[in-house]
Length: 355
Image (tube, helix red, strand yellow):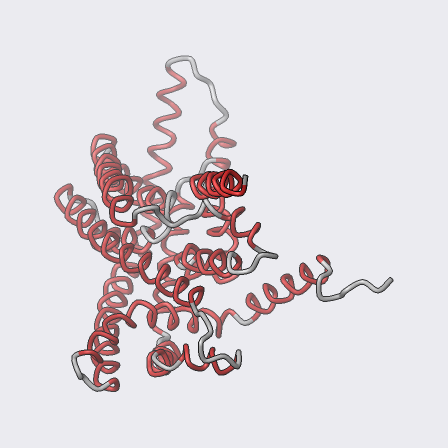
């Protein structure tokens, strides 16, 4: 009896591994292409709006391109100058942090808590966080600086956006092909990125003002860091808060660190728990575990940019998997518990109707 190679799970898994290995090997090309794609998805609605207002497509593309370039120049200027100064001060911050750690351990020893100082400092070294932040921002800055390929791809994607559905229909030899899944992917990712961009900007501005009032060094850089990491649900805000709170502790003391942490907590509760759920409705449709695993997976494959785009990429994969009966179970597995409960409820209703 012949076994269908096409439906063999091992063959599918092997193909998946090869694709992931290829993406990781071609990160230099894949990352700019993904950035250009998601920029195009965000900019497509304004472009279509300008087309409806009888503005020529090329003029609209140029307007959007110059707008994106202006934002990119602003971000690169802020990140480059701040990271350079911050990196230069890291040795001072590290020494100050070690001093605070030893003082804290000595205080504990006075109250009868004896700890092996050297081993504890070796295991728990907060100064590594400051280095990691500097390296991450340097990586993002280098990606933003190398933008020629990104903008070139961005222009071509926007110029082809209007005719892409027709090409899909031509490939499938059906003028009336339902492109619902294609529209669902683009609209879902577009909605997520649009809302996340607005809430991330609000988060970054609020954090910058809060830290400026406190007198923490490099408040604009921490605001940009909070803006970027707000694209990562659940844990992005925590990652953004840790280095800023550490710097407040080093520079201004425990009380200021507590106030900085309180500021991050208030902003993220208001934005993440109140504003975003109301605006997004049912949310991103992914479970918290899948969000965390996608962050680790895409970060490993594509680096810092993969971490920022992890949720949109996983959303697109989930929607695409849900479009076929053979892979629908994977879409349900990636989805949230609420989505699974709704599916079960719908199945029960269908059974009752059938009876």
